[in-house]
Image (cartoon, rainbow, N blue to C red):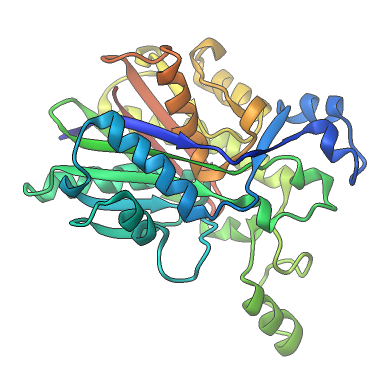
Length: 328
């Protein structure tokens, strides 16, 4: 059993930061950032909570799908930056979007989160015949966890949300989800209270860096090495299940972390860059939001059309990786 995306929607914060804005507080330049990442600007949440951005994207997706929110059986939110430890983003989105009959929970697989959530949604639809629709939402406010004194990381990330309403389909679907927990210390952000207790008071060494206790930490070189291998690996695992190759894919929608990573992945797959949807130049790395946001934009521009084969491929903190291949 496969899936069909009935409608999509997105929401972007009002605040826009260009590369030149970063030159005011870190030693960098527009050329330096563009050359190394491909990013020119990104959105950053100001007053907007994560759940609010997710709810706005969800409302647009529901409207485009042309369904009643009461008919949604499940809301899954992908996020690593919830406004609360509890309740979940999904519960707040469920209420705001009017999906009063839906169950709701969050998935945290970082930048792979949307693909994890999409695959989870498909499995619910496959096993519960009474469920008609699932709302999958990705929403992030990474800017609230950034160290704006670290030019290697603060320039990369942006905020926003995107959502999709899906239903079951008889079209083929193949996926691959994976993780390598040994790489967890390479990319993480510790909770504030835990950071102080574990590192300052107890002195316990859990293997994570002591730097930036409650800010995002990234070992850029090691994450890059992982990413350039994880993207092709995730795709090939899913493609093997589907019995297809990169040549059969109309569009690749990769996680938007760094243009060099995407270019290397394309080369390793033997696929032309013309087949890759790229939006990081104007959104930056929006973690779990990057794939659905790119998908939503490409559909809106008419690039992606019904009947075309898509490969959504992501990697992220955890370390995680994921791919889903299906027909739009």
